[in-house]
Image (cartoon, rainbow, N blue to C red; front, side, top):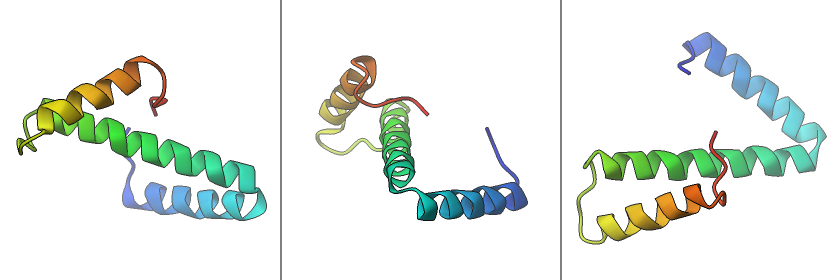
Length: 74
């Protein structure tokens, strides 16, 4: 899903307000953000955008975590 700048700003504002009110929700937002970044890293590696040494190993590790449910998909 692609958000406009205004929608992204509003989303960040709402997220900031909710996380300030509830520390459990703050942790969940952080977990979701980290999982989204890891899935994006795996996708970039699969697309061949980061082909340094060890990229194949990182890609296998990340996809294994996704498939086993350790990284919840956003």
